[in-house]
Image (tube, rainbow, N blue to C red; front, side):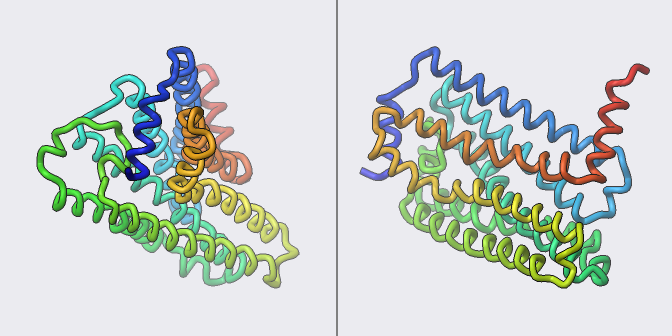
Length: 305
């Protein structure tokens, strides 16, 4: 029996009680709405003030925020569906899973690009305006999406080629393993995650130590940049935990078979929700420029007409 089959059997056997199911869904919905509300305020602040439009740092940041909003919305929606409908049509599930995978894989790549921009601003400031142009930033965002699509879309094409047509009209519990069940896809996924892990962490570590040892390391901006990259590293660490989730699920199934649904819920909160709450802290609160305009926007919004 495959890992996904075992996971499905355990989830079916150990369904939550009504009270526990309601509690879990309330927690997920409240967290999702809170994160999306904060992120929506950040997007509105960005949109209202033209000073951010030509700055590649804030463009990459707002792309990350939009990406996180899509990801949080999709994962919360899938979580609720798993309790209310339980099984849905494979074609609908496939659409949700693809969008969730695109946005999930975009996040570490976007964080790596932001770390590189931070490195250029501190270590080679005289060339920052030449290297980090508006056009190149938008091209970089396009490259991030293209990379994620090249990583995920082969799973869809392979499934279309190998599974019978009836499979796409059937109903399944909506997971990546149930809509893309071929073992070769799982092996390809694991190899892709390893490559992502190596590349992103190399970029994070390299940029951090280059800033650390740069001639301007004593400056206030350099210290702040190092702290920002450290926070990026922590955020990437949480995001990358998603790449180890298949192995973690297998271990949890062996260690806590009777509490497996609760273990999956804890993994979901830590891996999918928590990393999306860090971005507003890094730029919405720590960044002085963005914080100033965010306060203005919120104060104007709350003030009477």
